[in-house]
Image (cartoon, rainbow, N blue to C red; front, top):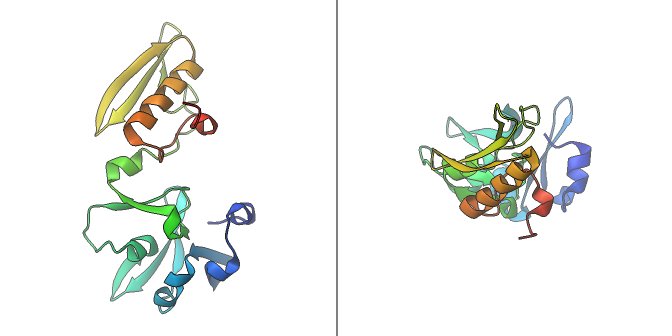
Length: 177
């Protein structure tokens, strides 16, 4: 759910948000032109995995706001990717239709992992191996002396295979190559 800090960081105004007041203020961001077709339903935020999504009952079926806005029917295998990772930000500029495999490339890896980086694993000899999954197949990127070198190699491979909308170890360096 959008914290005050996250909300203030977004380039938007409260005019472009659906408001729903419960025991706390919940904001769901969407484009102003989508507000009219969405306001007839009662949207609520539900936690799924690491983020919150807006859900409503539409014709007796639970519907996610992002799928509703992007025109994906029930049973459509495609998914909607929230580019900034915030499921409650349903502005069209923040969403794209993609496959589940591509969307899984956006998952941010836990910093409590043994190496501290996505796609990087320590080896018994003290070096680090970098691997990436491409279409469900684990692919070898390389073996490196440091975890940081392996993480940078992973980032290069991820950008090459998944494009700009992928979780990176060093996102601040994404435009350097």
